[in-house]
Image (cartoon, rainbow, N blue to C red; front, side, top):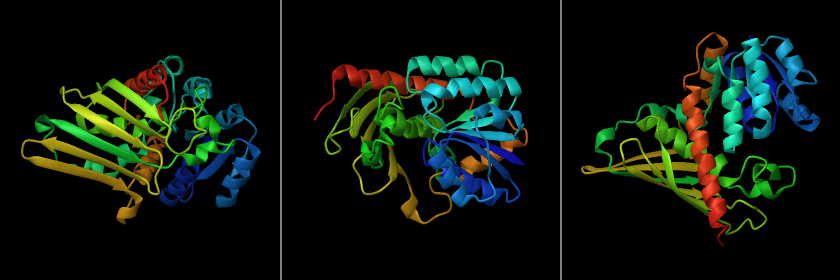
Length: 305
């Protein structure tokens, strides 16, 4: 199996490579990206072949591609992959604005089943095993904790920039909306969003935030984004008349694949073998558009302190 990597802009493709290698030891990797990132990738994957462009990766006809480029560049890559009929997993966020969502949808037109973009949390075993009477849920409380202080480093500041990944809301918020969509189905509507900077003062799009989201049932989810944290944890509490059901996703729980990285790798391999994307692209696009709407709300309200 030949697996292509187009771009290495975040830590995610490095994790993807490790999990893909563990699940498919005979896989070959072909990568293109910035020289320093490629060198780091090859340090972990010594047999990786390196090429100079997305076009040359695609010309090698890989079985599947992991795309990890900046949102503004996603549509161009997807258009080429769609033309070649090569499936791909697009690391988050695949788009951070309405214009980028539109471009992604257009680029994939006629080949939507080839493309998966999602938070890895959607594929965590605990999400799939959640025992919940969804019709009884009155409200959901969500707290996502993941430090974003490293975005102050100039090498990674594009993740906080409006013209990059858009900062806290698109990058962290996708985790909440993907899990909520996995549990309740598509059709989430953002009703409120505000962000503030409390600690990482050089960030332009905040390090804490809050969203209110209407679920398909009409119930509401209140989502807290905590980008100042010593731990990585994603906690969901589902409130019903008979009590609360709590779902906590954290690497500290000591179980296999607590955050869904391995589950995501399994989906990538399945797509390499001919399976369609497990999440319809129109559903992912709807989530991305909701996050773009939330970001606009937050910017129009102004950054709090």
